[in-house]
Image (cartoon, rainbow, N blue to C red; front, side):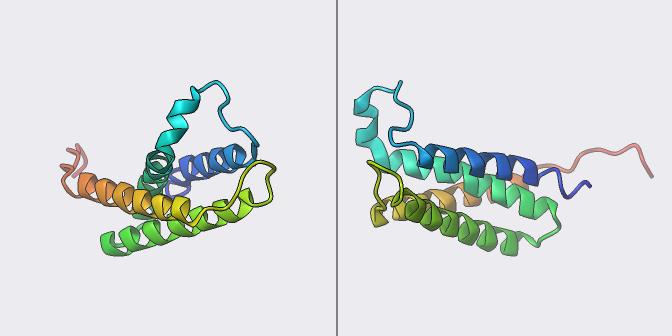
Length: 128
């Protein structure tokens, strides 16, 4: 069960991405000018996904390098599927530059999570 729990945030976050992609006008309460930063929004969104995937893979016992490569690949594939999904939503389209931003963000998020976990000090234990 311990290896299952780190995957809950990944699944929830991926579902939120899917839901937002299903909307013809996602987040209508935001000012329209924020969407001028579309590529940065994509990168940030997928940086979080890349970090969550890395954390879950690492907690599942994957070696650090494998977890890094796999989290990057999985987030990039999810970004591609998300762009394809948007091609079926009214007023949305699939954009390869959005996918490139998703992929770059996923790489950055996974790398940051990897660096953070590598430099984390082990917890003290009272067990001997």
